[in-house]
Length: 591
Image (cartoon, rainbow, N blue to C red; front, side, top):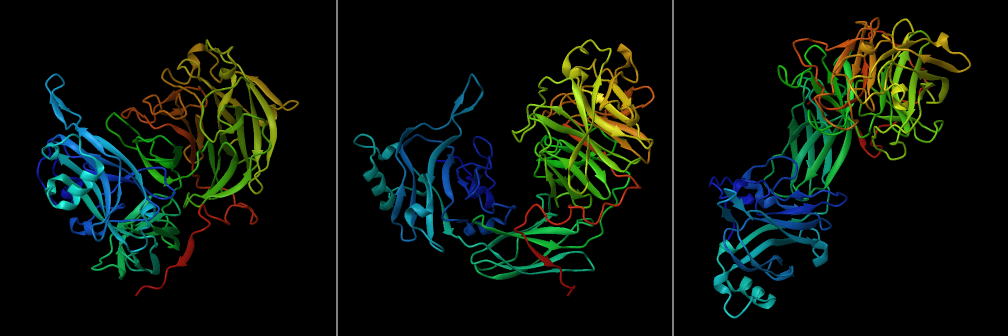
């Protein structure tokens, strides 16, 4: 009745060619785990690829839900249903009957198979049937061939009778044997092999452990995942997890079972940290050159997306926030979100501490870039008014102001103090429109010169500006004119400066970088990295032999200088991590 091999058969090593092409969800249930809004195919180990021999380890939490069943039929089915039986074969649950189901068919006009993939909705939980810890049950589909339809459509009683009669062949069924497991695994001991850096993890579960996973810091960047050796349920196992050469001061060890239950521990690792001096970093939420909200390391000399090939941008750390601005100060990266200021050590950007909530800004006002001034040892930030404030989301929509506000950010308290209101003009054809007179990027060089780029959603209106604190008169700066105050003085003919662009100054190389882009979220070949000449205001790609395309939208930039300040001992940036519930276990001496 079903296209073969099914998902379970494929995992068990069946190499037959399917009619319609292999799918990882072919003829398998999809599951909703407690506390998760996503769905996951129940195809064995939910964390890593498993040995086909271990399909007998399928497990579910009693509060998990079987949301539905994906199926591919190759014959007409007179009737079918999702059903559940207990260990003795008694039917505990049966969904509503689905009658006269049509199989896949080949379309000559489309030259392809149609109706080759269907979903039967279920939304059933083991707890509905009173199943508890260690109970086993069988769940799946039954699809009855038309041969058994003799006197009108098959009804529910007839279907139940056919299931228990033994008349239906094995091909009418697509089922899985599952064990109820509501107990999370336990971490018994963690040791670090000082010679190799490997972690030696001893753990146990009442059933089987699906994986021992190690993530960097307290984030989601996976460093390693290993399936422990187990021959029976309930065993205590010891697993060696090989670690990369560079990790972080702390790692997160996750011990998880086949039912999706997991226990998370923060473990002190104390490894050699790579030197970030002189490197360029950014932040993106765009999922093309990586996945998820994340910090990225950018190599300007090799940055490319198409020419010669994708290179020069790699994921550095995961991040659970949406960052609008960032700057490196004294070993920490200070960054802003629409509603707060945070800090994290450069050595492990997942160890985030809230410095302060943002309360001093007006409605719709948002920090859009930051820069550190080595002349007065102060962190500065610029703001403009933006539709994203209060939504917890990015939005590149300007909401009508034509000035930029400059603030200082206290490194200890996070207090924002207004320094000046900045206005600007430019010779571009859109200069009379308010957003085009708004400075939306900020950098400061060694001499205390401030640089900015105006907002522009065209390639003909983005210019570089320069000013100093000495120009402040009655709390205002400007109107500023661009450094290159001619129509042709725009940064580059291909340069957009839409929402959440960013400047940063490399204090060791004396280079001014600009991350351009049009939309705060969208990936685009227009998202490029430029090196801007502070004297001429003109920008060029970092390397002429590379296209300089970031592609993923980088919303903020910062560099790590060789010289920096020391933050006061009472700086509120080291006391907590993102996951305060994690348990800390210091690595024991090597065995």
